[in-house]
Image (tube, rainbow, N blue to C red):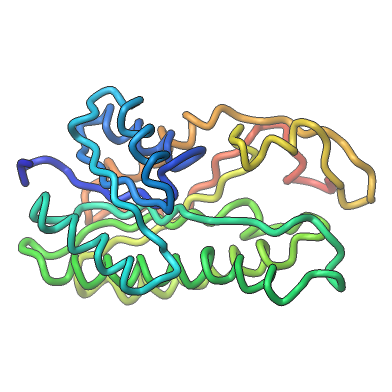
Length: 251
């Protein structure tokens, strides 16, 4: 494949936000490396894109350092460089009481949302630092939960708050390598992971209510927008959300 095109990695690309973002980037002229656990889902993402030949599916466990290293090595081997990482892969635990959450449930969320995000960010730093010209862009998927929790969501909320700290630190540490790091915080994009929001979820007052949703393709448009700027300009933080979801105000 040509190394002249813009090249991005999207983690969690087998469904939802990752799939929509991969398609938006491909539509914008990017070549995209699709990373995720399930190769069949990644290949489906590629086949459904507007230009399937600009998509490369690489089965990846973001919580495994060797698997992440292999992902970035395959990207450079295939395309010669890397311009963008959309650090998107994530998972949630069941909405159960804090005191009933198991260690295994806690750890599984931390392993993907925090450790996985760090491993991919670190690998992107190493890749972008070593290439010529040096530099690139990293966009971390933070979530509305990086600001405000839902009831019974401590592992997800804690990891997303931590992603914000990681974004701030990496933005500072990336300056000397011409690496721009920003964060996209998403609220109620209509994906399989978020379907329950439309059906009714627990609110701060304990009531169960349905929430407004937004088209997941608008998230892809937001990533394309953030990625469109030259590296001397950075959208450090962007929130894209369903306009009528309970975030601003008191619920």
